Image 1: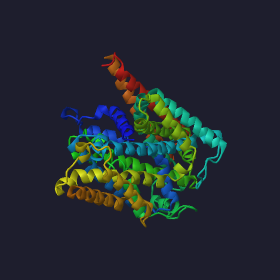
Image 2 (image 1 turned 120 degrees about the vertical axis):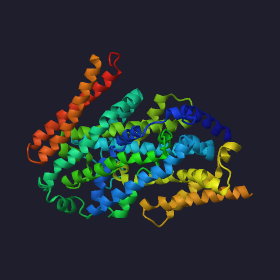
Image 3 (image 1 turned 180 degrees about the vertical axis):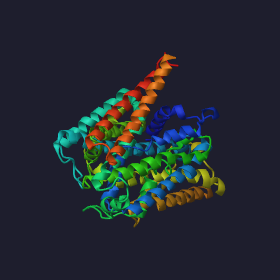
Image 4 (image 1 turned 30 degrees about the vertical axis):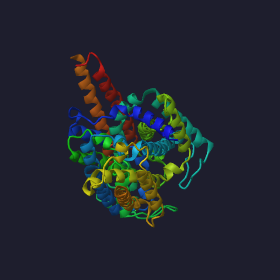
Length: 454
Length: 66
């Protein structure tokens, strides 16, 4: 068994070899580059669903605006004060830093978990695109509450789209990434144009005199759709905060911030989250209200913007599923040593397509996003403890690297234990990660301190 | 030199297309154009954005550029 892990770790190290060394000063990037990078990063196909769900969950307009304002601020501050400082001090990716802390075995498990979660996320993006294609062929999309595939037509659309997205990811990931850079600002305009265009349908006058009244009575009127849980200010605040939890508190954006000149570059994430996780969500909420609160992103965009809207939903799904498929493939490569790139992407694409045919993943997207962040969060707490707390308490850092451990059992136990505790915490799913982070931080520090005492 | 001019021109036209995408819904909201005109304008401007933005990117990599 240990030799199996050793060979896996060796294969994984080879994969990530290109970023093994700490970033050198001549490779550091300017703040403007970071602003540009983040500006195009947070407008994805899933925004069509998330903003619409806030309406369906009966969130009031004031609660939504304040929740998004402060939740996104907390996300920006998490990038700035948690993720960026560690990245700037170490100049390493999370992969290499975690390897020093938890050992290659735990890092492999982390990668496998990440790959699986990425596949579900990419699957949700394919499902969103499928709603646009279903509209063209008159195929009904699954209704709220659906878990299993609801029709052969739905499965066929998903399979065709999944096969197309996977094939294109295999043929040219880098070209598609460049195309995605062109698509990104346009997608954002689809959101804005769609919201502006449906305002007259909702009864907003051109002088905007009754805008607030319409928004509070016809869009975010505080009444949940039948079968949907009623959510409020704190749910929105926490959702906006944790929807990129794996990236900031979970530290996976160390891969980006290791190129930052200063840790304060974390503030540039505001250029991404406020347009993507505030304006786009508000826009999709207005659009869904205009179609009678039906969860159908394709119809929503078509009614608002016409054929370009359908193209927008399709392209948003395609361009955002592509890098997600790539990342899933990269993470999966750790358990399939020696496989060529195309075969890994095919495997990830096939798994993603199967998952996408289950509508539960996009119809329960808010819960999935919470679970996604929650699963990876303890790793961020472990790294945070090792980086900041251990030196202050005199606990030896990077013992896994120095002592050659394949598994830092304390890290693994804390990761799994935190998830077990979070599972039974008597709190709403959205709030569990925060006490979970402190539990992981304290438990890991205590375990490693106890080991030192022995 | 010619490549540089073409690249700048494509960039300008791409930005104008994006501006048209934004202007069309505002004009519709203000009641200056019909819904059909808005959707057609948005579609044409969107195609314009993709054509010119891709052309700008391609001319940037052209050996003749610059």
